[in-house]
Length: 145
Image (cartoon, rainbow, N blue to C red; front, top):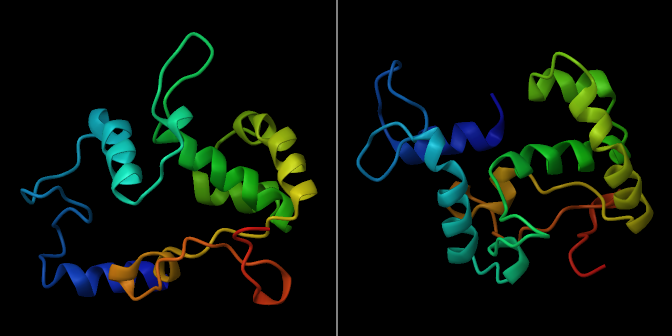
């Protein structure tokens, strides 16, 4: 079981095995329809202040929950993960979505940004330092590069 999931289960406390894994403040399942709104609210609570993520216009849309999936693919590919590895984790049955991320992945590779930090490392409540930094080769952080 991944480290972040183990930490989340310990933090959440003793729940029935059939209980939803992720719940809202009232102990109810998260609403998929509210995912983007909740993501934006939590990004702002976390100190993310890039206005272009939160504003909708004719040229731009607000950050969406699905963007996390695209980010995962965009970062995984230039870090040596195969299309099969990515598809196994995203549930993609075709390579269409993965192919859409390839150009962004090449740009990401050119920037040399490394990998995303694991949730267990990035989220203080799960035992991490909460830096949000990824790591490059040799484990150095990629924040600020």
